Length: 282
Image (cartoon, rainbow, N blue to C red; front, side):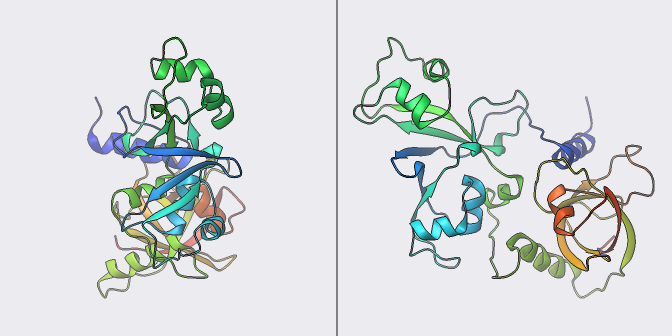
């Protein structure tokens, strides 16, 4: 049995260096997918007060340009009540890992239309074995009825967009990465008028780790705070969220922070270990 702090730190570590999932059922509201002859899988997303074109494009694997083309009335500050969103196949998960976080997955369902059959739904509309579809929905004799709701699979939500699902609003500023701009605002708000010194620190990242947003584990900075990081070689300045402390005895003592691959690439990092200038509250 590990302590809460230790278990949480291990989860953060694997978030940066590889996927991890905690055992639980998903508590995200299910979404219904339809089939469009031109677009393929399509979702009519019911917009909440926290949705933006950026967050929807991240969750469903599309782009803001595509969303705006399909929904001409949509912009960052005025969202329609219902948004037509194409769902990329690579966002689909048909088998859940044994260990998973219940908030990481959105259940996907399909409502049977006239002339649908099991092969068409499983192999043409989705990329899943027909046997998996029948077993998951306990279908006997291959019989389907119009209007029947089928459990298809799940969408794996990018970690960065879990903040949207939990109720944090994204603000979008043209020309600036949306997440970076939001983190910058929260960094400045957290200073409360103080001016932390700039420090020379050593950052580490793993090049083949999956992109996971702008996150770091840090030796000193407090969890759930924000940090300003500058690469002196490229002059790139990025704001990131501190998601935990670096576990003891796992990295050399000179490593001050372990960052996500997406953050390192945004900073223009070339080596797995490099020097940065950082500002944060201890």
